[in-house]
Amino acid sequence: MCNELLSIAFYRAVFTELLITAIYVFFGLGSVLDWPETPSILQTSITFNLAAAIAVQIAWQASGAHINPAVTVAFLLGSRVSLVRTVCYVVAQLAGGIVGAAILYAVTPGNVNIDISSGQAVAVELILTLQLVLCYFASTDTQRSTGSPAVIIGISVALGHLVGHYYTRCSMNPARSFGPAVITGDFLQQWIFWVGPLIGAVLASVLYNFVIYYDAKPFSQRLSILKGSYDEEEPERKEENHSVQEMKRATFSIKQI
Image (cartoon, rainbow, N blue to C red; front, side, top):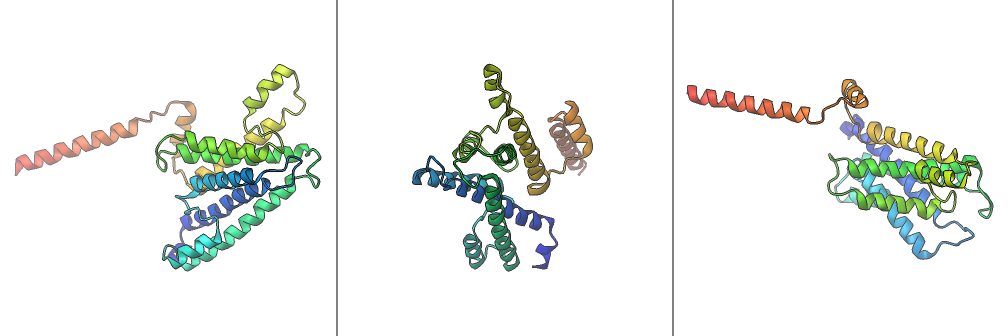
């Protein structure tokens, strides 16, 4: 128990449970609001299903992606997690539920029949893009995911549209909004679809690479990647050369014997 509390990975896992529960609640509850076009039971079911799929894809290797206190308690009884992890996960999940509901309440007009404000629109685009970029990282991370990322990224885009459609028609992509604006000459609210997605993308990158799964690249490597001078195959060549040298030493030692 004490060892877990001294582990940074443990606190990353607890935070991850809070984050993915907030995402799940935000999108799930967003599909049951009393919009002018009342969502069908099928639409709500699909939205919750996709939200769960995205949450699991993002976090299953960091925290197990429980999302649900009932699941965590079941894992405790099955001797899969410790008591202290169970308590912390449940607290994080409940806090995540509050955060997700609070954000949804903040970006949704009191009367859903009226237009949302520019600030609310930016916040919605930020959240939509946050989940999309987290999904991009999780599904294209070769250390933690195999196979084509196409399906899970498609699911992420579908999830964004199922809820974001009611707020901003769901952009999540400055290029998707810039093209039509150029053709129609309407740039009045174009800034919303740049500011929201770009902030969401930056936040997602920080969360994935420095909080959920810490990427311990040295500064020199990050700088060479930024400059475009980093050779991805160089570490592999060094490893191969090292292996060849070890084999030669072993062969020479055998010959001496």
